[in-house]
Length: 358
Image (tube, rainbow, N blue to C red; front, side, top):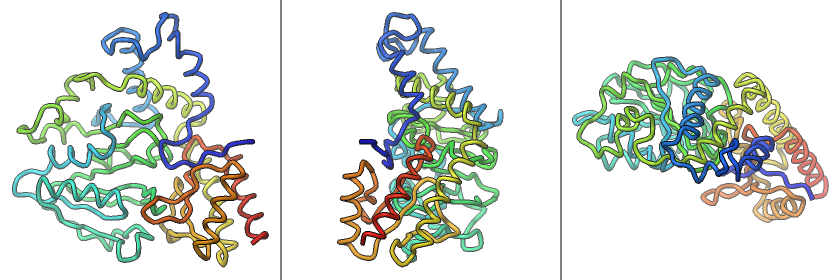
């Protein structure tokens, strides 16, 4: 039976990447060792490390004003590192609340300094992204924090605010899925386990000017400056995850880079949303049309019993990861870069069949 992977993260990886990693697992490029066994100071790993940095800069068109860091701890650690480094005494940081992860980011910052809600769609059950007109922005903010894509609620920013203070974004679930203007952001961070590779490494893209103004009186391991000055080798990095990330970036280039990936992601999302819209009396999309995510399609059925039946039958047919997040239930199809069009077509076929049956 075919398996269709719609997991929200860790998520699907490109099959060619997995096969390449399989080939090199025991004997990495003639070294007689797995890359997991090598010193992170070795020449062989150093080449992989720096290649991953250069590939990310190339694929995402990262300007020379920014640098790439490889950290650990996922986005959750970034929730704390961002305010520790950039929320100075006497300042407030602005947070736009668009879902659970942005709430957690603000809560972590609250324990470090002063914050302010600069916009929220919580009253609307996080069904949409606040428009720029709805945001309460201030030139006095230390920074403005946004979450570019919301995996739980299936919403995504389609236009980011332009402002005079640093813009910081958690892009864990949609980085590398579409073209963005990196220069618009002072800092971007993303856990790798959606589009970049396996779990274990967190990518940070930071404006050099921002790092120069970071707080100095914090633990060294939590300072971006520490990792910047050591090329992300201050402590042992997650070497295998970075190696896998480099393979994913090579695969991304072979598939047309961000232009090619975005076009494919739009086709996949349109296919599923079209099914939801054509049968809106049966399938109930969660997100508003103007805020729909290309990465996470969230929906419910008419009642809980029908939703349970849908998920049960889907699982029996080889569809995995379609359960909504435990906090809200329902259904969710996560269609990251590595999820092929064939999987989305199979899902829509099952959705049509289930609707007719019930």
